[in-house]
Length: 146
Image 1 (cartoon, rainbow, N blue to C red):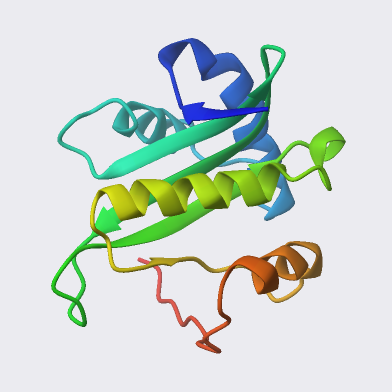
Image 2: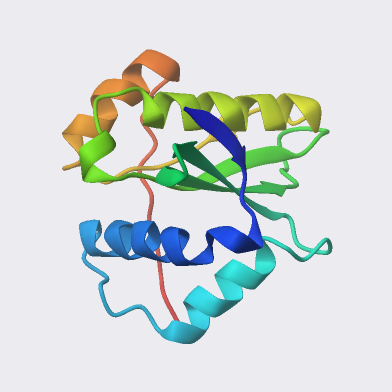
C-alpha cells in the first residue's frame, strides 16, 4: 500500500470514495459545487487544504483531507484532519491508521503543533482506532449553520 498526495488523475476514484464518505455521514446529496470547490482546493497553492490517498495496485483504498490553520493557543499552525474514509473492502487492513500517520508526518514537516479531528459519537469502529493513535480530549462540538 502506498500513501501519497492526491493527483488530478485520481478524480474518478476519489469521487467514489468521497461519495461513500458523504453517504456514511448521511449527506448523499451534497451540492455538486461544494464537491467541485473541494477538489479544486487540493491543487490551489493559495489554499491550506490538502488531500492524500491510499493506493494499492492502482486502486484507491482511502482518502484523507486536512487543513493547516492558525490557532490562538499555539505559536505555530495546527492541522485539522477533516475527512478520513476507507473503502469498505479495505477496512481493518491498516488503511485508516496509515492515512492518519501520513497526516502526522505532513504536520511535523510544517511545524504544526498538533493534529486534531472529530468523529460522530456513533462511529465506534473508527473510535477504536483513534483511541490507539491519539488522545480523546473529551471536547464536544457545537455548531450553528447559516
